[in-house]
Figure 1 (cartoon, rainbow, N blue to C red):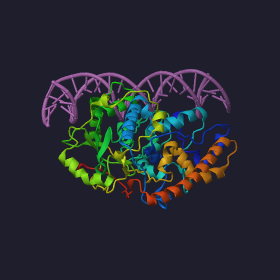
Figure 2 (figure 1 turned 30 degrees about the vertical axis):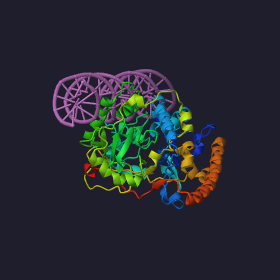
Figure 3 (figure 1 turned 45 degrees about the horizontal axis):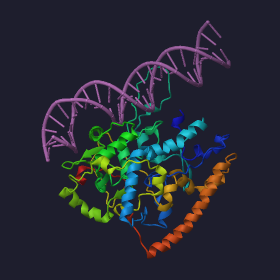
Figure 4 (figure 1 turned 45 degrees about the vertical axis):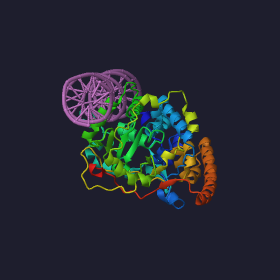
Length: 436
DNA sequence: GATGGCCTAATTAGGACTTCCGGTGT
DNA sequence: CACACCGGAAGTCCTAATTAGGCCAT
């Protein structure tokens, strides 16, 4: 099945000669993506950039004009509700961006590989999936035989602490589960915190600030124009049983993930540290109650702003979005995980080899390629000139970036312009209501 | 012609919602 | 009264697993 193809960079062990004959095979697809997603897919490691930026995971420029913020927000909201927004979310976005065109070209199965800084390794994130695989009974590995066998259980959706990536759990189609969708929204400054926001990132507690808008986005993604919060809420309630979500009692529109990826990009609507300090106040005072911006459509302009136009005015320079951070004090819970949960498989912490200002035009694959540019270039497979032309371009970009970083570093020493914090993240973030 | 391997389409089963509903609480 | 919330029940959609049948080589 072509849609099963997973292309991280090249075929197994980068035996790119297997792709011979497909001279126009794209090595890197450059396009604009919501940049928080990049860090979920880049595979960049902390060590690679911490030498230069020990404490900065992301750099976020603050808006200098309230008017800009308003306009950009409106444009973003409009785009969100009028473009095929969900397709830009990471899972589908990457699968649909990279896979279909490949499916038309590649007929040989391609093993997913990771091109890491340490070299080109085998199957993608194998160690990360190890715990998952070890849970599978050996019987499932038996070779296919004729005759009726006990029917295999279909893989259930991965739970939030599992890496979200095309794989056995998201094979083929464009399945993006609701909880994944919400996590994507929470990592997307176009909607967070305007429509959905963290109220306690450490506890995985978030609020649907504009439940109708979120539901509409979900409906757009699922091609269900009649989707509403009532319906989406039912799906959310099913997550209670499965141990993916909890309801935060006493607070409307507030839910809690039972666990989170450790390298979630946390977008909060204020100074991260300050918000953390303010959290108890907010939670206890019930300030969130009744402030839901569910006037919905009145808050969502409807024009035909294109994604491109919106991207040309990224709504990231907002004072209220000043903090993008990892959880400061995520705690590992000894509490047993719900039965529906799987062992934790977490992505390695991401980092900022590419500066934030580059992110909007650099795809995750591009970043990965950048990480391994020399190795890729050294392969020199015949018949893939375009691949290495792209690699050359990326190389030049890398050099320019390095030069820019030097300039930025010196500039920031004199003009610190953002509030960020990168704090060590624990291995596991199983969250319980005790975090509330 | 019998057998086995390969391929493909059809069927089946199950997961993840979606829809509808009646009810409760704020 | 509006809205959030709950959970049961039935339905839809999608996908993977399984099965059946056709084709071909031996």
